[in-house]
Amino acid sequence: MTAVTRVTATASLVVAATVLALGLAEGVARLLAPSWAPRHAERNFWRYDELLGWAHREGASGTLRHPDFEVRVEISEQGFRDRPYPQERVPGQSRMLVLGDSFSWGFGVERQEILWEILEARHPDWEIINSAVSGYGTDQQLLFLERRGLDFRPDVVVLQIHPNDVQDTAAERRYGYPKPSFQLEPEARLTLHGVPVPRLSLVWRAQRRLGESSYLFNRLRSVEQLFEAAVGSVPTGAAGFETEPDLALTQALLRRMASDCREVGIRLLVVSTPGPRDFADGLARTLAGLGVPYHSLDEAFKGRSREKTKFPHDPHWNARGQRVAADAVEEFLVEQSVLH
Image 1 (cartoon, rainbow, N blue to C red):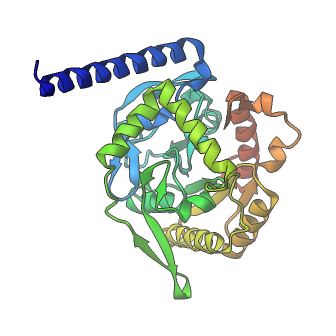
Image 2 (cartoon, rainbow, N blue to C red; image 1 turned 180 degrees about the horizontal axis):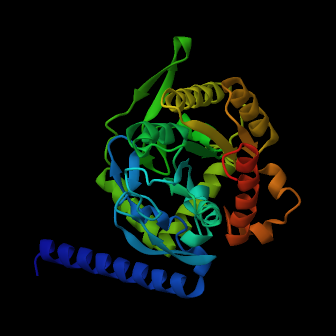
């Protein structure tokens, strides 16, 4: 046996042993450590989008699994986690378009348990089109509204905003995915950058696949993220309105969204998920200046234990939390003479 042959044989054995060891470790993790399961499998329903970064794969379906839940996900041919809606208005039906992120998308609950589905069931004279996509910031929601949302000719647009959207709007990449970004120029002028959005590299795609399927990789990545947060290389906590550049950018995005709706005679309303007090106060001041009705869900969830409205290992609302939100949003929309 030549030296080259021996080296090749040794390398092959090392590779085979490594693959076998990793396979065994993955099997043990799946059997004994269910809490290591990937927690962002909703991204399995995403596809690349050159304007938005990512969007739903039309017609996709499957199961979203998590240590706390297992729910069915179906994406319509229109790209929504919702039933199909005709582009043309249905006589006698009012129409609402919802813009939002994972809370509106219904992370962890069945479709019929999402707050917007609850409201539509209570008000059959309304079509409530839920266009929310997990991970979207206010910038992506604005771009979707301008590209597709207004074509549905809704009577009302409801934006559900989360405290971390302030951070999202300033980012060029979220959750490892490239995304578009706006920059605020003099005289509050918005300029769009990063479009067409670059595709994920092969390395990123491989990491994404591992992160969405491997218990072991997901655990190692979680440990790495905890270490980075501990040494201060990654910001932690929900973003508030204390970061002035982010606030200014968010204000400009909301101003443009309000202008887009006003130009075509559509009402814009905003609700926010619970977060820091400065976030709600800053948002209230911004929207009051724009003449946009706003409601914070902080009071609705105040005094309610996390165990009753959220999942044990995830901050999203469970089915009960979605009902709490639905009741509060319904009351707000009734006050605004949207719902009756």
